[in-house]
Image 1: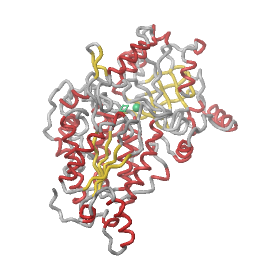
Image 2: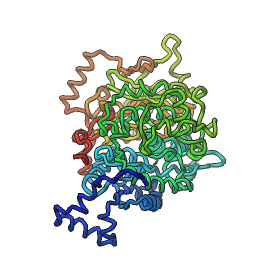
Image 3: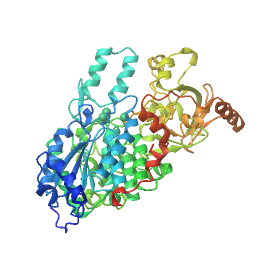
Image 4: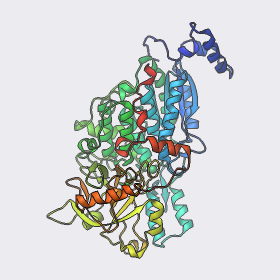
Length: 589
Ligand code: FES
Ligand code: MG
């Protein structure tokens, strides 16, 4: 336990306020009624919330129901009092229309809990994709001491002697299903084999990415992100996390001390090195905005592009979560980056800097976490594109395949650019309905566009931009086409799509003006993406569409969809609720 002088605890304003005996008694009696004693509530024990994201509806995080017991033990051992409470569930694969719609809802709910209840600090249980950013965003807004406990990835999945990785196996197997190589039942069995235990996705999808970035931000104990959910170390770090939460209260170590510009840059750099999900751009921008740290889209390229891919995990590489942990996890990756001066000075939840925590933590397996100078891919960060199609969109360069390079990036005079005919889909239902329509004349040089799938168009933004080519093309061996859109892509997908386009079609971005048959030019070197038509023609199309009431998208199905659509910002701004950003450090007042 910390030896710091106890300060007046925030919770004592509820539980021990002699100036207002009426309120104190009211607050106390209902917390005494389940067996707590006045000694526990009034003797100056830090009260630590356990923000519980696990439930039967959230299987990826369900393991936290068990882990919370170890967190509680750690809190008690350090002289604190644990109070566990539920967070609005966010299950990536189970929530309609999109789990991303719920990130901001869970954020809002958690802000109210952290602000309005007698908590001195909080342990944030994270795992499935959006649970991590939702929790960190809320902690940043409220700004009480907060520490992340990741739930950890599932064990490795296996199918017929090969690693079967979460999500990644779905994208591969659905091609085989489309080609008639496997049937419906085998498809489901293969996919189920990728999920052999409790935990979140075992690939470097959005869940593993965001938990790694929580660690890179300094919000979790070193090594926390990668420990597989069922391993003994997971329970042990849950205990340590609970203990540390109490100490952080005495040290008054808050999110505002940790989530600085330097920490955000460390997260961007680590995202490149791990081959992280393109969803990280949205979530890190949101965390930065709620923390009051300036960030712009170009930062992703300026800070992150030249960082090499060091982690050989699916979808960019070969291995899965168990190997990542055994090879040293995030600390071993950061150690490689520290050697090259790529990690900035930023304090973490244990009071030391990220660099000091990780220096000397050499990779235990150089085939899984590679040396900086012999990476899987050089310059593996995102590039940021702009043009008359959108003001910004990102592309994950580490997953550009040889097949892609050999088909599109072949002009020696212009080696980074390609052009093609656009075929445009308005949402995933339109795509599924029409992709195999021969009249679209989709060939291997067609560019597939998906629009109507941004934060407003498909509330929360749909993970649908990585579109499979028509079955006829797959049978001919063409496994992917360039895909571009205003939606997102699953972090477990290995497609080099151009994603997160802002502004989206529903906000009358340039994508709304695109028509099937237009020629489009993408220049990865210059970072441009343009419809090859004149500005006059573009202006005419815009005027005509505006006259027609703008880009059409489906209506709302729930109250929250209506509220979020009215208030949400675009992907480049982190898809945050615009009015929420002005509330900073609210517990400090
Ligand atoms: Fe929940 Fe991947 S679906 S972690
Ligand atoms: Mg996802």
